[in-house]
Every structure is written in C-alpha cells, then in structure tokens.
Image 1: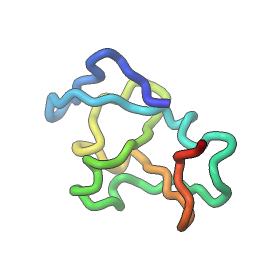
Image 2: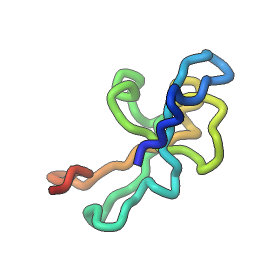
Image 3: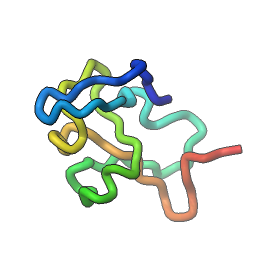
Image 4: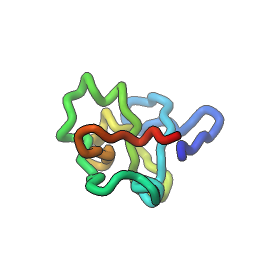
Length: 85
C-alpha cells in the first residue's frame, strides 16, 4: 500500500517531494516466507531511486536520500517477489 498524499511530503532537508509507505504495511500477509527488512542505508544510492521504501508510521520529515538509515526495503528470497496474481 503506497500512501498518496496528493503531492506527498516535502523533505525538510532537500525540499524534494516524496511519498512513503507506513512500516506497519511493509510485510503483508501472503508474502513469501523469508521476507526481511533491509536498511536503505545498505542499498547503493543508484538503487534507492528504483525501489519502494517503508518508514515509520508517523509522518516522516526527511526523504530516503537525506536519511537512508530511517527507511527500509523488503528483501525477498531468491525467486520470489511482492507481485502476486
């Protein structure tokens, strides 16, 4: 579930507009076993623009580029993904 605030939040540091997904929605029922949460800080910067990241359930004040350690990404086991029929 991506939260759409019709324009998103504005990062307090870089002023970039971004959307976020609440952390409580990160691991959904029915996702493959073995899904883990990986800190965005462990992901190369070039990959951060290509993925969906989750963060706290309150309104985040900084984007994943300014505060990568405050965001996570779901890491799926080899051969699986979040896309289901």
